[in-house]
Length: 256
Image 1: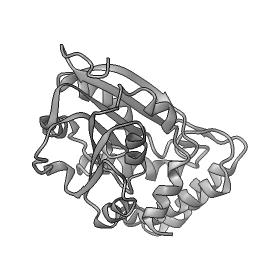
Image 2: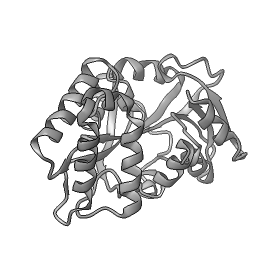
Image 3: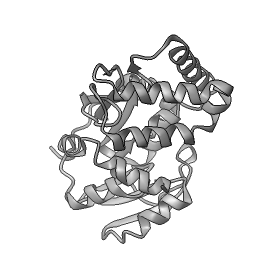
Image 4: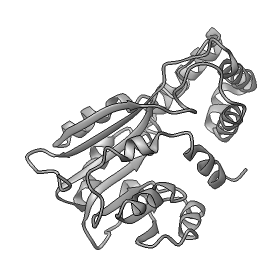
C-alpha cells in the first residue's frame, strides 16, 4: 500500500469532525495547512468555506493533493522548517501530526507565525506517547522507550510532543483557547484493535527504518510483541491525541 493510501485510510480513524468544530469561522478566511499530506484536511477546510494553502515536503503527497483539484486550494512543495515566502498572509495556521518532527517547536512556531494576520489563530493536533500501549514485556517496552529518548536527543522527533503543545504555544506569545484530548481509533484506544488498525500499525513499524536499526536482531520480536498487545481484550493505552487552539495574546479571535 502506498503511503498516500495509508494516509487516506488513517483519516477515518481520527475525530476530525470534533476537532474542526472547535475552529473559528472559516468562511472567507485563508488557512495555511502545514504538512498537508494528501489534502484530506484541506478538503475539509475548503468545505467549511476556507481558502487553503497546503505545504508539504513530500513530492508524492503534494502531487496526490493537487490531483484532487480542490477549488479554493493550492498545494506547494516546501520544507516546514524553512518555510518559503508565501507571498500572502493567512488568518489561520493548521498543523496536524507534524509538530512532533520539530522538537525545537518554539523556534519553528515563530517562523510559521510570520505569515499570520493580527488576530489570527493556530491549531495543532499531535499524538503523545505513540508507543504507550500495554501490556508489553520489559524488553520491548525498554527498547521503545530508549528509541524515543534517542530520537528526542538527536532532534529527530519528540514522542511526547502532545503534552507540550500548550506550553510551547504560550512561550511563543499565544493564548491557548482550547486544549483537549480527542478520541482516535488507531492511536489512542483501549480494548482489542480492529484487524485493519493492526495492519496499519504493522506497516508503520516496517516504515521505521531507524527503529529497525536501533533494535537490531530484536526488531521483529518487538514489532510482534507490540502488535499482539493491540489485539488483547485487556489492551490499554496511555497514548493520547492532543488538540490545541490558540491566538496571539491580546488579539481578538478573527472568527468571534
